[in-house]
Amino acid sequence: QVQLVESGGGLVQAGGSLRLSCVASGRIFSINAMGWYRQAPGKQRELVARITSGGSTNYADSVKGRFTISRDNAKNTVYLQMNSLKPEDTAVYYCKSERYGVASWGQGTQVTVSS
Image (cartoon, rainbow, N blue to C red; front, top):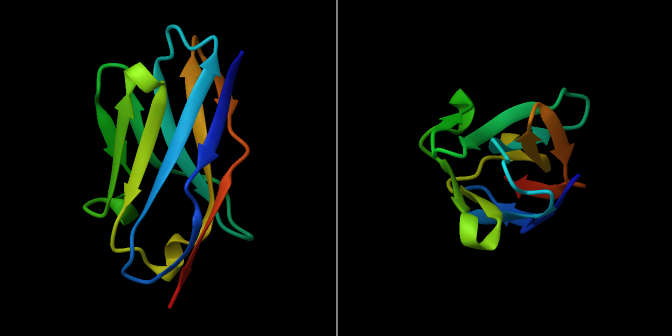
């Protein structure tokens, strides 16, 4: 099992920045990929950004050029740097790991962007 703990959410004004962190523990060996997803009220959970063990990344079109995903293998941590935040970025952000086809999720962290 992989345990994930997110942090870094909060309230920010439009145009501001936040950095989310996700620390992985447990059976972290051979995690294939990690990603950030978000879920706004009344909407489905959606992919925000994903990074593979090889460092390849992909982003939702809505965040390209504003968000950056990165990982620090020594700290077992994945980050999501969010710049130029918009009110429509408001959501609960979840960290996800993928290991041998099995997904693990964190508890989520709230991001609220005021206009």
